[in-house]
Amino acid sequence: MPGISIYDLFFSPQQQQQRQKSAGSCSSQHALISGPPNCGKTSLLLQFAYNHAMNKDSIVTFICKQHAFDVKPPFLSQGVQPDSDVFTRITIKYVHDYEELLKYFAAFHVQSELPRAVIIDDFYDLFDERKCHERFGHMRARETAMVKTLALAHDAIIYANESLEPQYECKLLVSDTHTGDGPRLQYIYQRWLHQIFTIRSLDNSRFSVSGGKVLQKGTHDDSRAVYSLVQNTLVLEQFDCH
Amino acid sequence: MAVVEAAMRAILAAVEASATVTDEQLSMLNFLFEKNLERALRILDQGGVQRVTSEPSHRTVFQVTGESKGAAPCYLCFPDHYCSCQSFYFDVVAKSEQIYCKHQLAAKLANALHMCKEVTMSDEELAYLLLEC
Image (cartoon, rainbow over all chains, first blue to last red; front, side, top):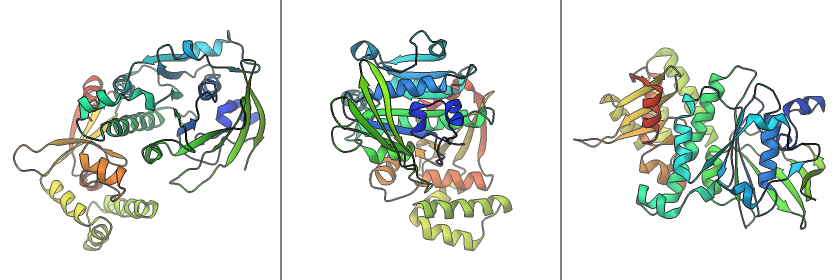
């Protein structure tokens, strides 16, 4: 199975075929996208969701905190209409905290229809230190909770890929905000999310996203894309593929 | 780490094909995992690995009993990547001192040797069980 690459953030699988681009030489269906605040992560996630819901028999689950879209509405790409019927195939699932995330993945196999993609926005923010400590009761409570959640999510996606028809695959894309050079708690993320895309700010409205290195299988996809957030629109400016 | 995992996969494939483990294979596993192998084999000898499968979805998880005498704790395990024991977080994830905890090793060996106790439950029951991870 192709896995997740930078192409998936901007193009649907059908569009990638038309452009004769492969969906990446990587084999992981689990990825993290990490970037500074207000760099368009949610917009990229929504574009990823849109790309994977374009097929009429595909559904996508987008998980975020309630009112996340009210506070910072994501931008749509050029050419994507807000009233497109593709959005009817994207289920927005609001969660208060990581425990609701655990319940979702624990019961993943009970769903009548498995999604083609599961997207989790602002993953780290779902883990309140006090609540994690109440449950796990030791000094690394938040990290323990993150480990458990990622493992359950990873298992759910593996289950989906074993259950779906061979031509379909289920992907997991998680976002997190960082203030330094890279994702916080990368040693945890990389154990289950084998692709890591890092966003860097070029100026106030232009950003680059690169990465996608598979840490275990030894294949690389060091593509880089430059995009901007202008007039409430996500605009892809440049794409370098390797 | 990738090299150790590849070696482990090769050994387990051979073990599964023959349904036995040779002295040479044990020696290689001991070289790779040292004391954890010894602990895993004790768990195996005690019949401490159970594979739980849900119906009708066929999603699975392993339950592995700890080594403590008396009321031994039971851990939930995805052998390739997770165990609910504390050693998994501290020794495998945080410190990267081990590749697998003893429960993961026990589950992998039990699976290869067909020594798992098989348990079936409903999809809903498995969902509740997975929340106990």
